[in-house]
Amino acid sequence: MIAIGSDHGGYELKQEIIRYFEENHIEYKDFGCDSLVSCDYPNYGKQVAQAVVEGTCEKGIVICGTGIGISIAANKVKGIRAALCHDCFSAEATRAHNDANVLALGGRVVGPGLALKIVETFLNTEFSKEERHTRRINQLECE
Ligand code: RB5
Image 1 (tube, rainbow, N blue to C red):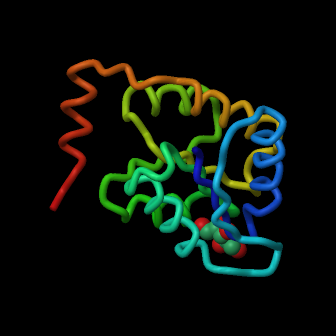
Image 2: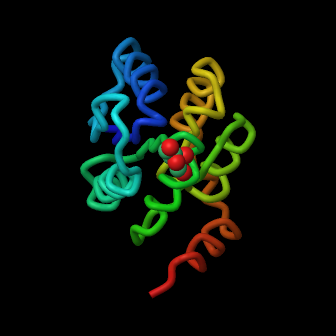
Image 3: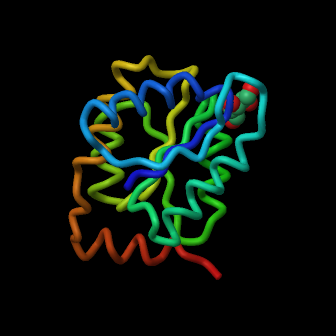
């Protein structure tokens, strides 16, 4: 199950990704928002992040205009490693090296074609489980 959420700046891209999920029979939970009406990205970033740390969803996707605000919001939740990716190389590397559990996208930065390739790459790349990457991920957590 993939958690997905956006503010108004990411709404249109969120709907494109949901269309892709439905076409490809990928289970998802949509945390909103539900329209282009202006709203606050921290609310949606945190709800998606919470679903991932609680384990009801295995990964999350968060989208705002730039992807920056909502990635900061998600990263405030303990246990979240949210990665803002606007290219496939970064999406692959952040799964393999950082075991990122949330993908952040900027709906005003990337078009839907590239965004869907980034989503596919993120969802289909496994963590490498190499000792040096596990060690560094463990060093990210602070009390
Ligand atoms: C909303 O206008 C915009 O600030 C928001 O979507 C996001 O880009 C914040 O980081």
